[in-house]
Length: 401
Image 1 (spheres, one colour):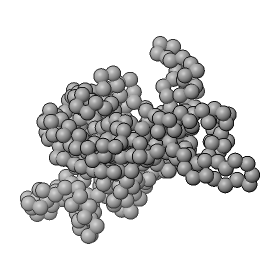
Image 2 (cartoon, helix red, strand yellow):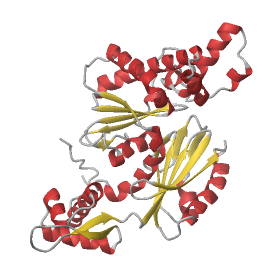
Image 3 (cartoon, rainbow, N blue to C red):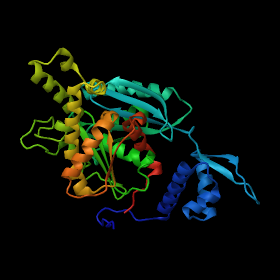
Image 4 (cartoon, rainbow, N blue to C red):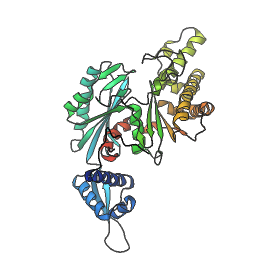
C-alpha cells in the first residue's frame, strides 16, 4: 500500500482521470499496434465512446494515425491505429568520461542519426562543443516535431535544482547543464543518472521487464551505478541520489576512490578495476609493466581475454567475483525479480556470468529467485535510456498523490 503524503499531494480531478486514460490508450496503441478502437476498449476496459474521443484527439495531435481496414464477419470494418513515428524526434545524449554519444530517435527509440564527440575535462567547454552538435543533429530531420532532449550522466542530479551534484569520474560538481541547453535549443531537457535512465529504458522498451514489479539495473563502466525500480516506481530518494551503491564500501580500508572514500565497490568491480588487475599482474610477473599494459583499455582487455590471454582472463574473473560480492547484499536487502547488468562486460558474459551468479549464491542471505541477466549491448541501453526520459512525459504514469 502506498501512503498518501498529506504535506505534498495533488488531488485527482476530472482532468487527471482524462490524462490517465489518454496515457493508457497511447501505451496500448504503442504495444499492440496495429489495433482497432474496439480492441482498445476491450484491452482498457474503457467505454468505446471514451476510446473514440481519445483516439480522435491523438489523431488530431498527430500522435497516432489510421491505417488499413481490418476484417470482420459483419458490420463496419475497423480502421487500425498506429503510433505516428514520423511525428516526433527526440535527442538523446549519453555523457561518459571519454566519449559523449548523441542520437536522434523516433517514438520507438529507433536511432535515425547518431554522432559523438570527445568529452572535454571542463564542463563549460563541453557545453560549447555539445550545443552545435545537437543543432546539427536536429537539422538532419527538420520535418520532425522535436519533443525534448534526454541526458544521462555518470553522476547524480538534484531533484530540486535539476543540476548535476557530482560526477566523480568526470570531475564535475554543481554544474547546470539543463538551463543553457534549453536556452540554446528551445527544447525541454530531462537529466538523469545513467543507471536510472537504463532502468527506465527497461520499463519503456524492454520485453524482459514486462510484468516485473521490482527491477535493479547495474551499470558497469568507469564506475558502477544502480537504478532501482521497486513496486513499479523509480526510487530516487529525497535528493535524487538513491542507488549510489557503487560508492558503498565493499573493502574495509581499501583503495581510495575518486569520491573521497575508501574501499568503494566500483574500485574493485568496474572496467577500470579490471584494467588495474591486468597491469598489476604484468608488473608482478616481469617487474615493470610494458608500454602496451600501461595504455590498455577495457576494450583491449576483452579482446585479449577472447584470444585466451591468461592475465586478461584472470582480470575479468576477479572483476566478476567483486561484481557478485556487491550484488549479494542488494539481493538480500531488496529481493528484486531481476537484475540487469549494463556495460561492455556483458560481451564476456559466458565467462563472467557464471562467476557472478555463483558468488551471489554463496554470499546472499536470502535465496530469492532473482534473475541476473546481461543487457544487449547492440541496443545501446544507455543511449536508449535518454530517449525514455523524454517519452515518459507522455507515456509514463502522471504524478498523483
